[in-house]
Length: 225
Image 1 (cartoon, rainbow, N blue to C red):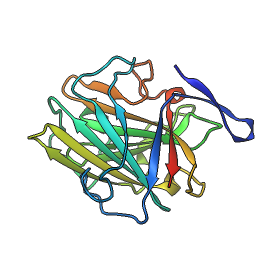
Image 2 (cartoon, rainbow, N blue to C red):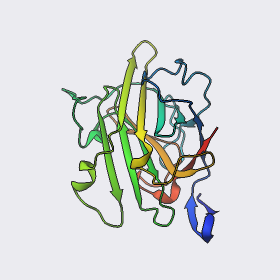
Image 3 (cartoon, rainbow, N blue to C red):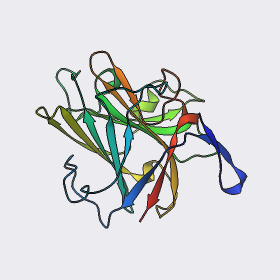
Image 4 (cartoon, one colour):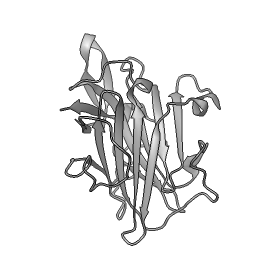
């Protein structure tokens, strides 16, 4: 399923076939979690609609859009649902460890093409809860990973009439990539959702395993004008 991708300086990484284009925005903008807002309207995205082994997951086809500025990477998730599974007594003021036990949209993003086991993870829930994690699969760090702080921000909005929730992230690029943001810069990335009481998994690049943490299956995000 994964393809070999030749990189600069002769490096080789195994990547999934997907590429999401992140469109440049002239300036940073307020988070609204609204796909019809000016920064998001008409911006093309990609879709996550399969389970971890590639099987279709009807009713949960998720759209993901991306934009970037000189400082931040923006992501918008458009998440249809059948039944929500939400954490009681949510907190949006503090990080929620183990947020993945409830409904979330997730992104895994890394810039280290030499060591693909090192990457960052960001999650947002339909209630606006959040967690960010520093992942190193070659050196698991128990609680240290989730105590890392990227200073990212989230916004969530729930439309019960349409049975869709929207999650937006603003991630400081300096926390995920030390390179200067510019057109054609690429990062390694994957998107996932956990949905409903049965914990339905919805993947952009299916991993072939129950685990989401299979960096060999990540696709790529490319910054474009």
